Amino acid sequence: MKATLAIAIASTAVIMLASPLFAEVKPPKLPLEDFFRLPTKTAYRISPNGTHYAFLQPWNDRLNIHVAKIGEEAKRITSSTERDIRAYAWVNDDALVYLQDKGGDENYHVYVLMKDGSDVKDLTPFEGVRAGILDDLEDDDDHILVEMNRRNPQIFDVYKVNIHTGEMEMVAENPGTIGGWMTDHDGNIRIAYAMEGLKRTILYRDNQDDEFHPIFSTDFTDSVIPVGFSGDNRDLYVLSNLDRNTKALYLFDPQEKAFGEMLYDRDDVDLSGIMWSRERKKLLGATYYTEKNQRHFFDDRTKELFSRLESRFPGYSVGISSMSRDERKMIVSVASDRMPGKLYYHDLDQPEEFRLVADLYPWIDESYMAEMKPISYVTDDGLTIHGYLTLPVGVPAKDLPVVVNPHGGPEVRDTWGYSPEVQFLANRGVAVLQVNYRISTGYGKDFWMAGFKQWGRKHQDDITDGVKWLIEQGIGDPDRIAIYGASYGGYATLMGLIRTPDLYACGIDYVGVANLFTLLESIPPYWELARQKMYETIGHPERDAELFKEISPVFHADKIVAPLFIAQGANDPRVKKAESDQMVEAMRARGIEVQYMVKDDEGHGFRNQENRFDFYRAMESFLTEHLKLKN
Figure (cartoon, helix red, strand yellow):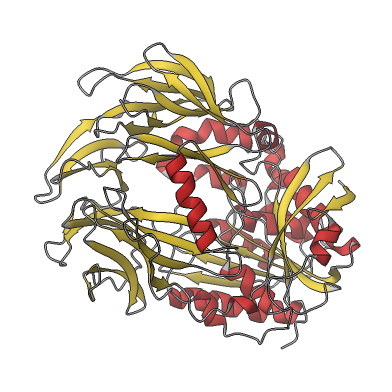
């Protein structure tokens, strides 16, 4: 498929001629470790009463929880040495919970501890079980609601767990079809989301003592997604694309089983969520993503607050990552495509004061970083493809080495913001192309469905068209194009090397799929409810057996002529190590050498800092050789 090359990076003139924010002087070659080491501090969370905050900070090369009374020194309260702690939260003014798995297996346990580090407990001490927090029960200091697949690995029941004793009671038993639960503002489980084959049904009950009953059913392609209750816990806010292309925000009356007012919509993109005030029990806004993250406000006070934040930090993307219960004290996040992030403590009672609490990566000089520029182009079958192009700083945009970096998923999308991978490559003089190929989400139902059963086919054509456009524009050197991606992006790497062997000088497959037959045989048990949907979006291993042979890289290893580097976590629950093993064996059976890195303590992507360093050092060496990068 050839792209229609009356293309625009918003328009070609804008890309080439826009005045840069910083002087375009070629930066020095920065240490690889600066891009991939742990942040100094991150993930600040304010306690409900607003007197303390917690944050993650490295200790022995692992992120651990620290707690400080506001204005005082912090104390480390965890001592994890095997894995970073990535997700945690306050559950009351004195206790926190966090999630942690083992070696990347994604079977998360829920731990609780006091803010002084005492009384650490594993609340879900079960092997091979995956747990998560459904609701922190804001008005109950002694309990939380936990989702867990202990009874049946394919489905999640809900338990009310005492954080002091560990005692638990099942409060919602999954009949076998529930793919998600939702609570109201009082912590009562009022919504269940059923997945039966291709049918999706919202189940509802007036109170926790009632039985659930269906209030709306659709095919999986028609979304009616509850995202919250109204302030009085009566009506629902839902995102829906029923009888339209993009997801809009509606009120929905569960008792009448009827849609109410449409509150906001966009014709170009889906809405992604809502902004809600717990304190005021009020809808504040809706969120969506065009080239960058956007907000539509329903509340004047919130609109004024964000206007003030944007005025205080012009040119940056601002957000609020944590608030006290009274919503007076908050952590304000400030970032951009060139600046990885700073966090400020802000008290609304002192509107002019913003106290810097964390510069996440102070060693990153944003004047050395590259701009992430939105692009778009039209394919010959009429689809507009959006993406991003990052050009190295201080280097003419002509005959550059290129890494095309297809995203994973595939039903997600690339977004604007700081990417350590992209900035590392740009610092090495490489242009980076990111393409939201058909099936990427956020662009409406039609664009998403255009990618059904197009793994390795039209998805790949969309990526190829973008690369050819870069070459035709004179930006990319046709002899120095690489393809690199993770998960589905790793699969796209393999298919790119197979379908267009003359286009790429080399490829890097990171935890990528090699065989569609074995992929669907080995999905995690808790993905089982989505199996029929996978058959529709990917294909059926029996009915579409010929298609699977056509689009599974392992059956076409003989077509790969470019150098290949594969990296894999041994404990990956999504794309099993056997996927990469098969590909390596198929290549070596044909006498083709492939560089293969396996990390025994990792899963779907490398999280431990030392493993990230190893991977990116190997990537740099591989790309330097095959793209002929200059030191």
